[in-house]
Length: 153
Image 1: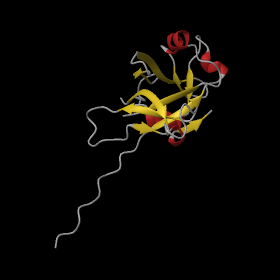
Image 2 (image 1 turned 90 degrees about the vertical axis):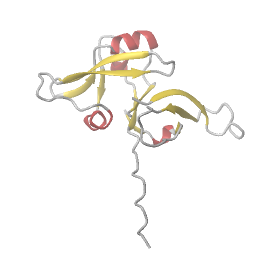
Image 3 (image 1 turned 135 degrees about the vertical axis):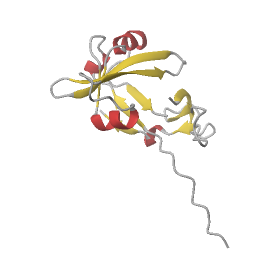
């Protein structure tokens, strides 16, 4: 008898949610991101560049594409979503206390839905509907619970 096949590898969903502060909602600033979150959710930076930076392309719930500059700068050095952030803020008009969700794996949040449409219809507690890239080796969940996202302020 042959040994059993190893289980399929688990595919982690790298994501986090940031509660926006007043400084994050300024058209003249940027969005500060903790190092650990940037390392998990953004492509690696080329640290030989001065300053290290790259372009990030993101899509919102309506399919609009946003281009941001991810840069590692300042004293102390920190990760910022800079150029392009002001355009996003001008258009979306977020306010302090709003949540900004990052998902890695070029995944797109395409909407949200009730956790249980029969028992909790129109509840504030909803799941994010996610469309994953076609290149994923196996299907991932179509719904992601916001409670499973790592959250930071």
